[in-house]
Length: 199
Length: 165
View 1 (cartoon, rainbow over the protein chains, first blue to last red):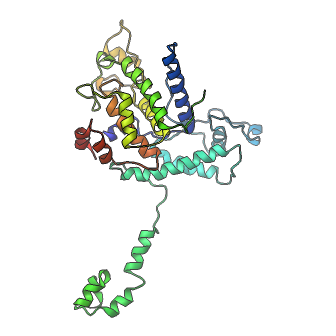
View 2 (cartoon, rainbow over the protein chains, first blue to last red):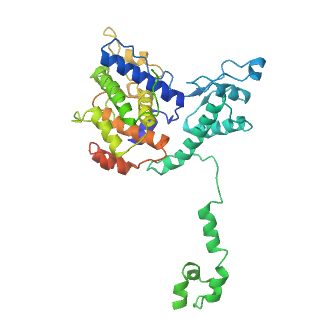
View 3 (cartoon, each protein chain N blue to C red):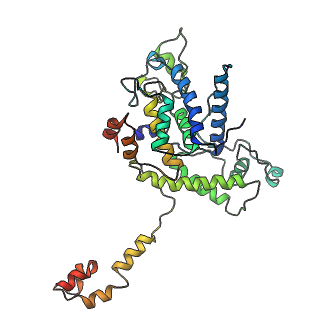
């Protein structure tokens, strides 16, 4: 049922903070008018609900130089930042292109520092990062969904510990202690010293 | 008056319940009249619990933030047939299925390929629990497995267990 739900929405799960605020405002307005018995106009809460970073109007030179004025509900600096990069394309943030958008996002904002003008941009990028991390956990939530990971770490704590246990550290000790009949290449020595001693 | 995302989830639930109750009443029997087939989310009978009580139950056994509940509405809009939760069937002059196909954007002419779902009283509970699960998994740092949710949701436990992946 969960997978069907995701297929119906085309796996587009990403939601911006502006959309959440707009949704909350619409709900609050509707609820107040409905309870007061007033006439209400019900537009869709979100028109064109798929997220699109569209570069319809390329900024001119003087717009690139001046910093964008942030608005409370929109991440206004984001569009200009994306227009600096090669963003004449439309970024449709579904799961398959999510990592691409994330990497481009970081490339464009790599040399930026948080200021009052672009603070929302950093919030959004951190939200994206957290969303990517959650997608890894999402996969463990009993959902058969193939996800692309952003980075492939080969040196995790678990892997280091395993390598140390098998190949490094105490292996020579095991060889000197083991008197088992299987010799130096005894596979049981690596796992449990007690068994070798008892033998 | 702007909506505060930091408000407690119980307040957001009341707003959701008001809106969703209105939507289900508006869409009553419109889907069948328009010729849309029931989906996997449809129940045979109307559940006895109301929407507000159901959302409170979701909050009780799978507590999450306000943004998760708002995201549920957004996801429901994304899966609806027309992009809005209020379903507008074709006019009485053009009540055939073909006219419905023409009016819906981005759909092919065949009847079975209409993508989306019309939210009504028979499928809203299952849609809510599924949307809640998806939004919690995606937006919240603390998430719940399908088994945990299905155990506490007695309404669809058997159905979920048979389809759980």
